[in-house]
Image (tube, rainbow over all chains, first blue to last red; front, top):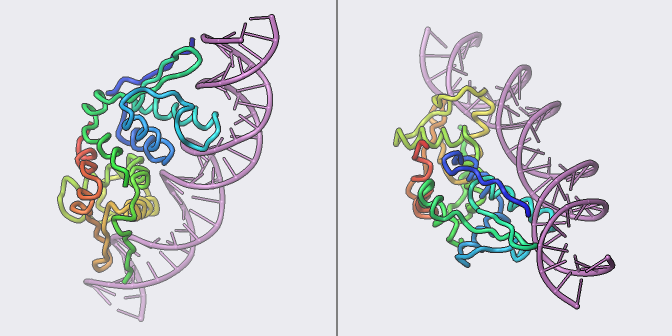
Length: 100
Length: 100
DNA sequence: TCCATGGTTCGACGAAGTTCGAACTTGCTG
DNA sequence: CAGCAAGTTCGAACTTCGTCGAACCATGGA
């Protein structure tokens, strides 16, 4: 079973998290997670991109400390690190929440 | 006298503004502006980068709707579009304010 | 009028990021 | 066991970004 590395929240920098959210696909993923308030398998995201690209975007979000991922059978379930994020970057998720 | 183009705030997207703040230099510039609560000439920013690079970063911030720039003699003074930003992206500036 | 100063623009360069197909791994299920 | 479905990894092609030096443009003063 694959395991994923998640950075400690205090090691996550503002530019890094901004960088991660600087892509419309990734913002869409975070919004999907916000609207569900639950974890989500990669392939469930409604985006017209290849598997490889999808995997990459989840990777970036994970390395930026935004999501937490774990294997569950053949799927990998991701969820927001909501509480930690709210503590480290208060207001960030609220910012993403709005559709605009 | 040079004039600058500033986008309408409703045309500024979240990924665009995130992209602009995804660079440590630009975050530093915004922090400097926040701490002064006044406008700032390009060359006053305490960053060890060339004139050209400096100009570029101000450009990016301007196009992302974050700062407003105007010529004053030979200098160009920039200031935060604080009120508009707070309205369009509430909590964004507060996020940048923290040193971490 | 000439020069110094503050910024801009241009072209170049390497670094980094996005995207994909293809091959591979892993776990479930018939 | 065979086959499928979900993800990962790799390499390639391409784009974008950050940085700089050099040349350039305005403005204000000597």
